[in-house]
Length: 167
Image (cartoon, rainbow, N blue to C red; front, side, top):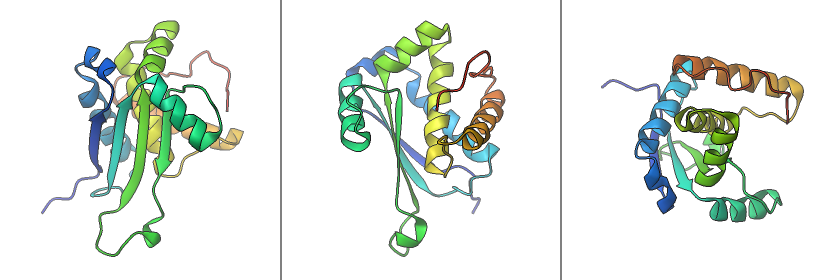
């Protein structure tokens, strides 16, 4: 049996607005598989879910879990550490939620193809699930370097070129 380097990813399209982007599921899957392989995350056989939702739902999640009553582009919810998960159960990485309207608005405002921005956010969310963060400048540098490497493998230009850091 061949083990894959990437996790088993379920994409759930929760909001009708995503119907405008027929390739969204494939874009997300490719981004996560590429991320797992690029950073050798040790996630083969692990599981995660990606919910493609809307601004209203992600605003509620952001308010409940982060105390920020506004929509955001992506949220990650890492699962319990492997030693806390039941014996014999697949390793759960966690969940990612991505909001259509915010992703669309940001892509349009930044002049980026929607698929490129969606890929970046899927990669960003995945990196949070495997332990990356951006609370400090050093963490942000490490996370952004990983994102650049992964996105380059996908043929996507550096999303941070010409931007100032916002943690």
